[in-house]
View: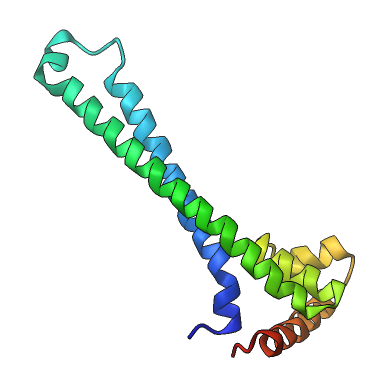
Length: 139
């Protein structure tokens, strides 16, 4: 069973995973462009350049499908977590939890955004997590 913090951190982990796969997709597309470049000699094309290009296209399509599925999962997870964060009821605490776990801000950044001290935000975060745990039945 996940702790409240682990549960909330799922969004950031999935977001990082998606970004990593998007970077991989970008590299594959770049490689595909290199393979289909007009500067390739006809010998290279005859020796498998077209097959390599098709294989790369297949990889790109598979990776795009995977990423699309993970983005759908991320959107659903964010909606689910937002609903649970809303149970905290205190608008300041909701903002802290949302900014930290949905938007990926650090406590320092949240303090600056909310025009509060770091210590205040750290305390609010702790209190908000306690309420979140109680309201959701998590540890």
